[in-house]
Image 1 (cartoon, helix red, strand yellow):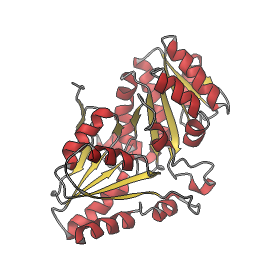
Image 2 (cartoon, one colour; image 1 turned 60 degrees about the vertical axis):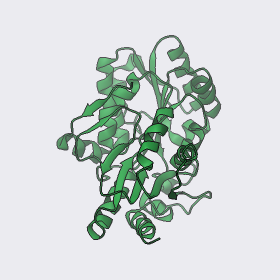
Image 3 (spheres, rainbow, N blue to C red; image 1 turned 45 degrees about the vertical axis):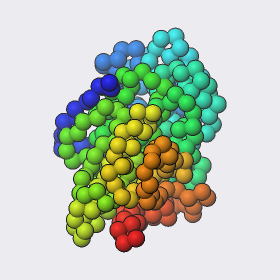
Length: 329
């Protein structure tokens, strides 16, 4: 049985983490993790500042390896370090990590099952103002089709702060997907329990519509559901799906069976959470009305994060309108 972890909510810690955002929280949390895991080394591809790792680099220079803008070399080096018994986490921007080093990830983590942890910074469309060279909507669909890789896609920076140490200690081949920008409203406002596998309940307001979300857009989902529930109480419930592995499918199935309609939200293209849910339904004998708000299968006009989300119907209004459509049909 997976170990169940109780996360005691701290408003002060939550506000701090979500103010500085996921990338800065990631770097600062690794600084704390190093105190407990002396063998931990960090690998990066010229992103020490972008990943909030400057303090780690300055405090533990002997455990910090900057491979420059050579992502394939970074993954190969970190994998070798792990193969020799070390604990390694490697990070850079998601498109450069997942797309440029696709073969190294597939072979070292999927095929060889080395317990390397890799982190994709600014996944999704948060860097849309820089164009699709710096966006990554293909990472989750690709990674989920490689056997043996565990995926963690945190809902907010507070959750990341609490669970990153536990995820690293699992010692599994792991992809951590960081989405969103700083100062996004927190998703978690209360204590929660997690087995690092099952979806986490955010709100329970009836069994007509279930909203499933992953990553930082869970904040928009939560706001949209609050709007809908003021007009249509006891209609919509919300779970976040931070974890992706085989055990997640069973937990997800046990949740989905209780609802008439399901709305799935994901910044990735179809093939991420959307396909993950369909595979779960495919293994079941029940029929559900299921809708998807995810990145379309073409590249959008680029701009700010909010502008990009709006085109995907992943802004607050777009999500609320999708829920209202499900309620009336």
